[in-house]
Length: 317
Image 1 (cartoon, helix red, strand yellow):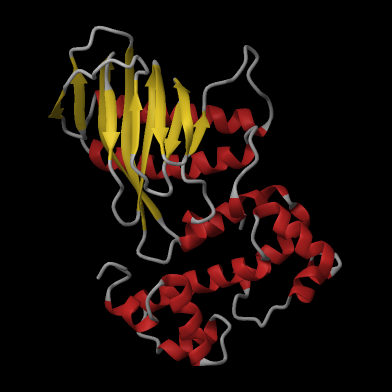
Image 2 (cartoon, rainbow, N blue to C red):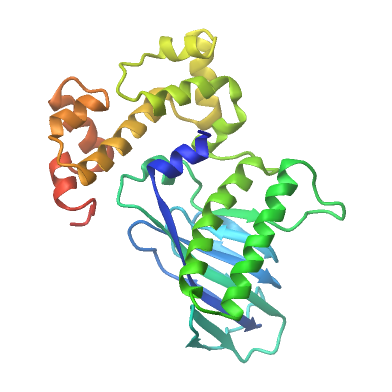
């Protein structure tokens, strides 16, 4: 199984398309901090926009851009005119909300929704993505690109078109269909991010480091083994020093850190989905001492395994 599939199998992600927006300038989309396990997203279908959020400088957006906020941060998207936005109204069709205004300037159309992370520890995914991720699905030049990148780009474009068609002209089952398509959008967007022009971020950067793949596979396939850096290096046919350097260079984290995150994600799933005793779960993911497992789990997740289980994975419980 490839790395992205492994991540998504550990941390299930569903989607919810909530709004189709058609605005004339001046306009704005102003969203606050997202809820627990939510990653807001927007797809700019047509027009231009400016994005402002705490994760970096303002960024200009063009049609085809997909914007994700893995950190769930508040953000503002607007037409860039500097004028006071015209108020918008909302209505509801069979599948989602429809928003519009009476602005007479350049128009912009969006699909807006959120990706919902399953009730498992999500640091392995969220902490390895940037606070905001802008993926450009439209070709950057007259000739576009070639190879795998253009294949994924074409699939992204078709997926967005289908989501938009269902939003404009809903039929029986449209609400469920657009939500399933929204979940597919998450996986395809991350795939495109790993194959695009900009270097991928975090764990996904390892998709471009084939020499490190044996170590990553070992972490996911046998997380309960007492792995050492020497063993990981041997799997990758490297010296320990070379392995440590290449892994750190690739994602800015050590292999030991990533192994711990894989173990805690698996442990969190088992705590919620089974009645297996905590100590047995700890041993299953590589901790011979219950005290050691409890200590690492609380440090990584923020609560004890017992409280995590009792809360159903809701850290705010």
